[in-house]
Length: 94
Image 1 (cartoon, rainbow, N blue to C red):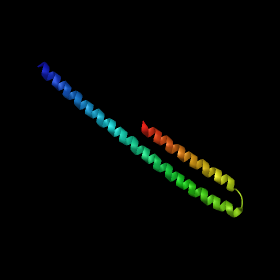
Image 2 (cartoon, one colour):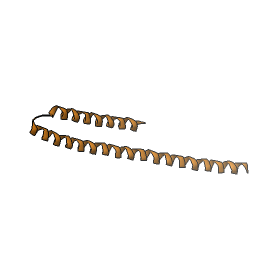
Image 3 (cartoon, rainbow, N blue to C red):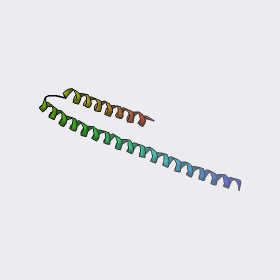
Image 4 (tube, rainbow, N blue to C red):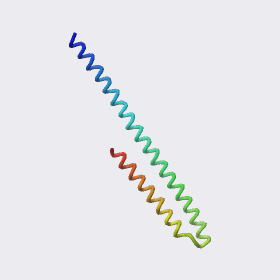
C-alpha cells in the first residue's frame, strides 16, 4: 500500500511539474511576442516621425530657416529609438 501511495504522489508531482513548465514556456512566448510588438511599434513610430521631420524640413528649407532645430529633433528621435532597442534587447537576455 505504501508503494502505491508513493507512486501516486510521484505521478501527481510529475504532472504538476509539467503544468508549471508549460505555463513558464507560455509566459516566455508571451513576453517574446510582446517585445516583438513593441519593437514593431517603435520602428513604425520612428518611420512616421522621420517622415514628419523630413516633411517639416522640406517646408523649412523653402522658408530658408529652422534646419538646425529639425536636425536636432531627428537626432533625438534616432537616439531614443536606438536606446529603446538596446533596452528591449537587454530585457530579452533575462
